[in-house]
Image 1 (tube, rainbow, N blue to C red):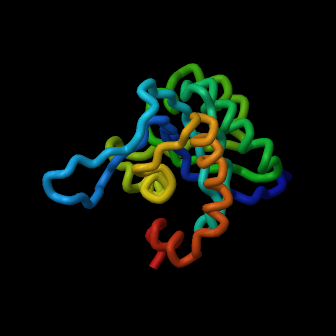
Image 2 (cartoon, one colour):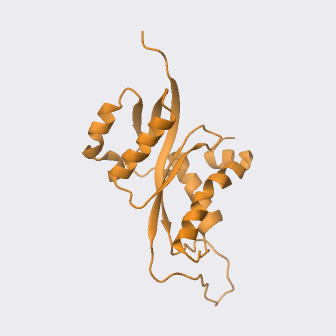
Image 3 (cartoon, rainbow, N blue to C red):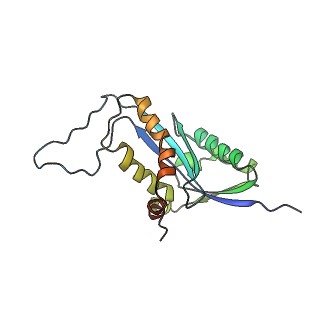
Length: 178
């Protein structure tokens, strides 16, 4: 008899961490140019995140230099390692790094513990982590220039603390919980 496993639902996606800050929606005096310092030369990293424990916000968030299928596979392997006794359902979009045949062997090797749940094309509003990325950009990196790229990455690493400090009502609101 096969023992039952606890099932866990993850919402997975990545977000760009760019040294050149986004300006987004801003208020400014009419006729005056809005200025945010920039480094001139941009650097980018990518945060891969899997939101679990809905609606608490717990999950796995990692920063990578690239966002290829190799990094996606590494992230999913870390999830499997973190939740070694559970069956994982991972909601993912149709990005090429999430759907490439290069992941087939990994997925077949882990089919007894991992199930990918595809989202319809052009439906980021259904992936709860997208709401989280948007809210974090608005509150952490929007219109802010960090003196070094390392400081910007540290700010994103501190996102985990920010997630823990985020009031549940606000988090639930982001996730669409009434």
